[in-house]
Picture 1 (cartoon, rainbow, N blue to C red):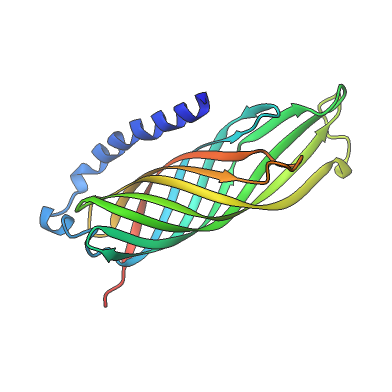
Picture 2: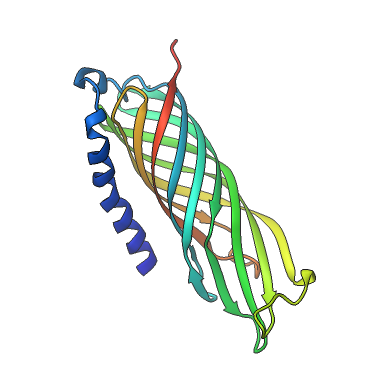
Length: 216
């Protein structure tokens, strides 16, 4: 619970600072007012933030996360936007627990990738509140360490992939015709019955992205 509160506070606190830094770049207000009413296009987005495992098996060490996104957005109604995102995410987080009296097991989720469907609701002409959900594949690394904290041998390092679900929500703000700010909280959930998987990965991210418009 403390990890979730920390991520929420960090994302919410950082967005006004980020917005104030780019305020001098704002374009003509009339153009901004049309930004989410005509935002059909291809998005490129690099999200940066902090991630942490949700796990009841051991001690969690959170770390930085980087998520590269290619997305497509189009207006569905005057107040609803829809689309999808394809992403690749790198994580530094890990989970450590004692497998026995003499060994320690360490989970790593080095990479995960997936595709999300995204639906946004226009709260003002330049601001969008969105939810996203989809399928995620995690690339895990599982190590057994001996009493000397040195891996016993390569046979005790397991690499594997696991499918899971992805869920998230956030706020997006256009500050020019093509540039936008974003803040989001995301949750990746994997098989909780597996002894080789944490319960999930929680990420809090902020980003600046660019949209390549598509004109009909």
